[in-house]
Length: 115
Image 1 (cartoon, rainbow, N blue to C red):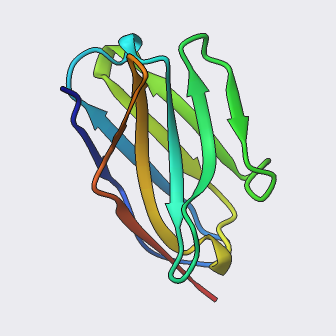
Image 2: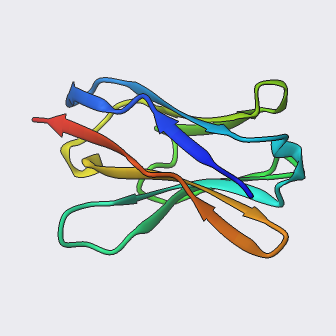
């Protein structure tokens, strides 16, 4: 069983920064990949960024150059550094992990960017 707990969300002005954290139970090096998704009100959940066991990364076009995904295997934690935030980044952000062909999700953390 895998549990994921997000933290770091909050209210920030446009142009500001936040860092989200996802603390996982157990060793995250077991996971095939981890990622951040977000869901804005009335919209479908969308992929923000992924990081693979090889440390390769992938980003949605809308966040390229502004967001950085990383992981610290020693702390069993994944991060999302979000810079130059825009009001359209407002959403609930979810942590995701793929382990043994199953998907695991955190409870989500709210990010609100004011204009």
